[in-house]
Image (cartoon, rainbow, N blue to C red; front, side, top):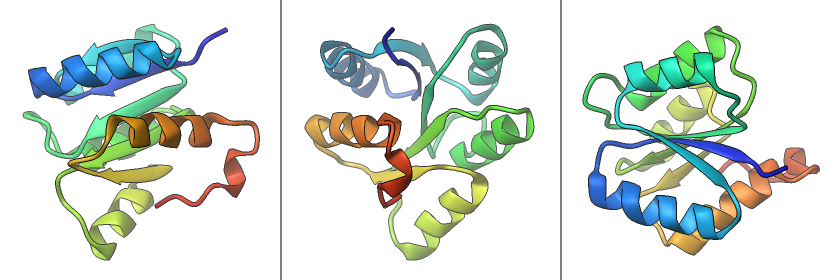
Length: 128
């Protein structure tokens, strides 16, 4: 059974290339452009991994992570963000993310990070 990824991103070009790359890597990809839509998808579909943009049009991606964790989502969460720095990463991890990936990133790095975070021994993988 393949891993289902919910990609929460509002930039159409980025959605297109990320979806293509993740699909080619063997992931099933669902897409949401807003925090509100992501919450609906998580309530109605099985999702193993959520990749959330930090700068969503209707919410901060860290706030989305806090909400879905509070609502019971136990899957892996990766925040992809144009912001960077130790304080930013700590805020994302404190919100409940399992990792942070700074934009711009190589698609190969995204795929490698997801494989590492979803592997059976993922607890041994550093978050940043």
